[in-house]
Length: 434
Ligand SMILES: Nc1ncnc2c1ncn2[C@@H]1O[C@H](COP(=O)(O)OP(=O)(O)OP(=O)(O)O)[C@@H](O)[C@H]1O
Ligand SMILES: O=c1[nH]cnc2c1ncn2[C@@H]1O[C@H](CO)[C@@H](O)[C@H]1O
Image 1: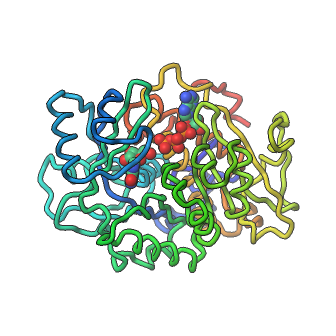
Image 2: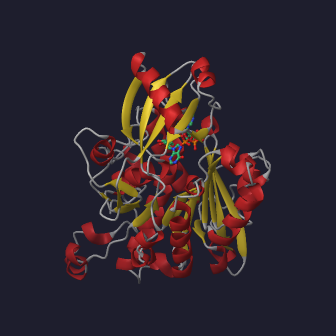
């Protein structure tokens, strides 16, 4: 496990300490590992630049992620080929991306659950998915299917807006019996998306996902839900509110999805509302950066050293230096929030915003899993006197998440090709010496 945030920290994992005593106590071989599990509809992204008439021709709603039938798929793909519009084909899937990015950032294991074609031809979509996924993502639990994985046509129009058209193949055929309960019970988090609930009669993905969620709930493993697309939530916000309140511990959304589920347009107020249902919430807001909210116990609250921020909730960032806790672990729970503007004000040139939110979530998961890892291996550390959900403060996590989003914005793919630099060139030496 590579640790998130600043490297020279008193709690930074002591494995690398030169002290012979610590070395003796914790040899790298005896370390217990932490991992996270994600479930996804396994898809390859086929990205193409199109104009809005293309979307109209195929009956696609701009900005939405929608499922298309085989006939539309064939016609659409043919037109993309004929006009030579395909820019690139790469492994995708909102949770697939998140697991990949987590494993790249943490340099550690994540497990991806879903389906995979049993017979894989070199160059096929299944082959491409596997070869574009980090070797740290454990694909050993994928369930075989006799047919193709899904394809996600990622259509970018003149305005830069992206529209997803999903040709599902057999991506929704994950069966409940393929969910390994011990694997989930032993994980640091179970990560799912709202897309898993969009299935047809013959599909088993929703039942499989619900089984995994119930198993995580029973084992006390945090369930992390990312909302995927606002249109899905708008169809039945009350169902989603109830599902989130009953089964989800951490909610990730962008401001549009936040509005769809909470009714609040302001991302801070949407995050505030979501905390009535969950322990922690991430609300990304494009060029506005991101808001992160959570609970802390009165006795563990830490005041910020940053300026207090105005907003719909006065001084909302006053306790942003605190580590997030489960509400149930707080005697006197207080809601705490933080906001980070885009790293360095955002890149000069954005290559592609696709997956910027997935990247932010991967960073939050990295922090969460680091806490579990540290606790597994150094349970007596003073750090764990506080029963916290995260390794770092809300403020540090949100800066880290924004930093990762930036990295996604300056590259083409939603999947990171490498981890973050050990030291940021823009920060002076003194930052690392404290
Ligand atoms: N136009 C922009 N300028 C600067 N930073 C941006 C911009 N758009 C996105 N970001 C950065 O990326 C993060 C996530 O962006 P956004 O809210 O667009 O995610 P999202 O809609 O969930 O993305 P996706 O669903 O594609 O993963 C923001 O918190 C911010 O740090
Ligand atoms: O229905 C879906 N299921 C799973 N993943 C999806 C779906 N629609 C879009 N994406 C995925 O979202 C990522 C960006 O966040 C894209 O890489 C795309 O593959």
